[in-house]
Length: 276
Image 1: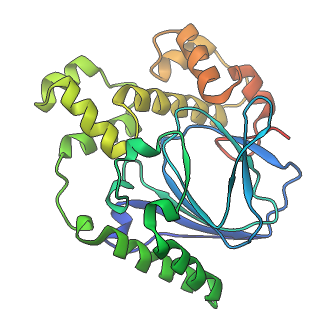
Image 2 (image 1 turned 135 degrees about the vertical axis):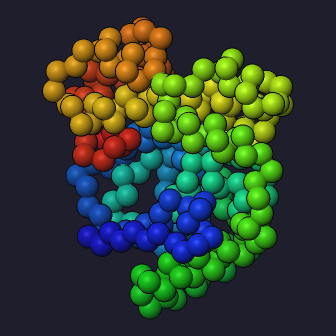
Image 3 (image 1 turned 180 degrees about the vertical axis):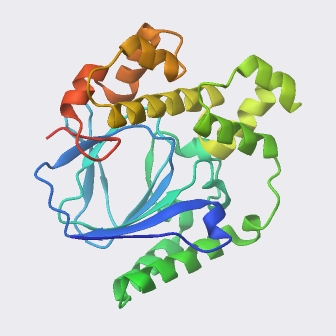
């Protein structure tokens, strides 16, 4: 298996967390349930065989994806192929960082997977052809950086119009237990309705939805590092949930499993649960 990651140079590193290239991955399972993580991604498949998206419960095929597609912020889990025998490049944007590259509000991509040519036009197919012709993984990353610089253009160097969105987003990611919305709206200088609209357009979900995702992520990261016996009530409070019942309800919404079921089924990769 080949797995290589790349952090782009400035200014792309302000908006992109990492670029990942992989091939030769041979897991024993064929499908994963991918849990909401607050991220937005661009995926380019260098094989020609379409990939499928499945119903979370019946595993019936709902959609086929081929060559390149974008995945918006998810508020629900999604069932996808495990990556077996694929040759893929994944651009993982920083949380809330994808909007300069897209011609539409990020809210239009929430809980959807869209063919990339509908977003980027013929330029994405031209990029894929250059990636296929590349002589090395380093050249693949270089071509990808050039494409993203062209899509972002001057927006990559502009001061963000709404710094309060970035500030609130940063607090949600790093301190999800500390956010209290009423105090927040009193401090930022915008009405609740106006701020929610700005946040949703830039990030892809409402502040309340995104905070739930970040609290869920805090919980599963804690479960990952302490996968023995849990005080579920204590974990709920530490992760920012009102009580254990709210924690379990949100956990089911975001994963389809109770916390105990999740611990039994999870694999080594955070946010991926083998289902078949």
